[in-house]
Amino acid sequence: MSTGILPAERLDALIGELWAAGYTVIGPVREGGALLYDEVRGSEDLPVGLVDRQEGGRYFLEPSGDGRFFGHTVAATPWKRFLDPPRRRLWRAERRNGQLHFLVETEEEVRFAFLGVRACDLHGIRIRSAVAEAGPEPDEALLDRRRSALMVAVQCTRAGGTCFCADLGTGPAVDLPADLVLTELLEDGPHRFLAESRTEAGAKILQRLSLGPAGEVDRAAAARAVAATRRTLAERSPRLEREGLRELLYRQLESPLWDEVAGRCLSCANCTLVCPTCFCSAVEDVTDLEGARLERWHRADSCFTAEFSQIHGGPVRASTRARYRQWLVHKLAYWSDQFGEPGCVGCGRCITWCPVGIDLTEVVRDLRRREAEESGERER
Image 1 (cartoon, helix red, strand yellow):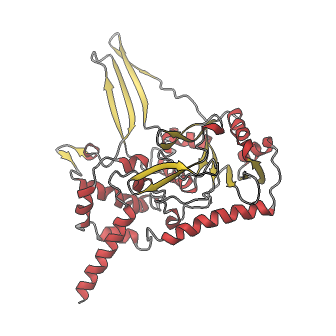
Image 2 (cartoon, one colour):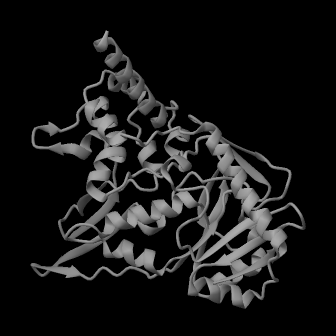
Image 3 (spheres, rainbow, N blue to C red):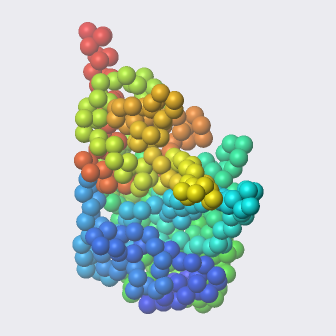
C-alpha cells in the first residue's frame, strides 16, 4: 500500500486522526505497577520510557532511559476484553399485569482502533475470532466488533522474558494483515516510526497525515530491529518444541507429572484470564426478589473453576490435577483437533501472571524428558 516516516512528535496526530475517523482508541496505559490496554487520548497516555520485565510469576516496570513509546512487550490484559466483554447482558424481561414482556437488548456500537498490537496478539485475535465463527451459532456480536476494528500493529523490537512466539510461528514480525504497522526507530536518525499501511483503511489514515518518505536507511533500521528480536528468541528456542506435541500429550494423559504440577497450582484462573484465546464462558439468570424482572447474562468463566464442569452429581473435573491437564492439553492438542491449530500464541502471559510461576513450556519439556527416560529403561 504505502510507507512513510512518522516523526515521534507527530504520534499525537495519528491518534487524533483515529479519533476523528470515529474510532475509540485503545492502547497500552500504565495502571499502578502494570500495563493494561485502555482508552488512549494522546501520546501522554502511553507508557513513555518504560520497559516491562517479565519472568515466571514476576512482573515489574522500570525506566528504559530512551523515551520509547512502545519499549515494552505485551500488556497484562489481552485485547479480547474489548471484542468479547467479560460480562454482557443477553436479554431481559419484565412481568406487567400478569404478562411476561421481553425487552430488546441493544448494544452501543463502538468502533475500536487498537494501537500497539503485537504480532502474537494479532494471531490471538484471529484465533479467538475463528472460534467465534465456528459451529452452528456464530458469535455475531464478537465478529461484528472485530470486523469494525482497526488494527495498528507495532513490530517487536524487544523480546520479553517469557515470550516464545517464534516457536509457534506467531512472531516477532507482524505477518498478518494489520491496517497499519509501526516500527519504532531510534538509531540512524531522530526518534521516528516507519509506518506502513496494509489495507485501504490504513492507507486513508496515512494519507491524512502527509508523512515524509521512508528511505533505505529507515527500512534497514526497521529490519535490523526485528531481526535482533528474532535472534534473542532463537537463543532460547525451542522453548516449546512443536514436533509431535499433540501425540505426546495424548500419550501422557496419565503421567504422574500432572500431580506434581497440581501440587503447585492454585486453581486461581489467572492463566485463563490473561490468555488472548481462552474462551470459556457461562450463562446466568438473575431475578429480583419479587420475580418481576429477569435478566440473562453472558460472563467469562474458566476451566479452572470447579463449577465450570458442574453437572448433576458434581463437577466432571473435581481435582486441580484434572483442571490443569484439561487446560494445557486443550490449548496444545484438543484445540488442534477442533480448529486446526494450537490455541497458544506464545505471548507468555500465563507464565508471567501465574502466582507460583508454572511455565507450560517447562511442563511439556518435563513430559518429553520423562517419556524418553521411561523408553530408555524399557529398552534396557
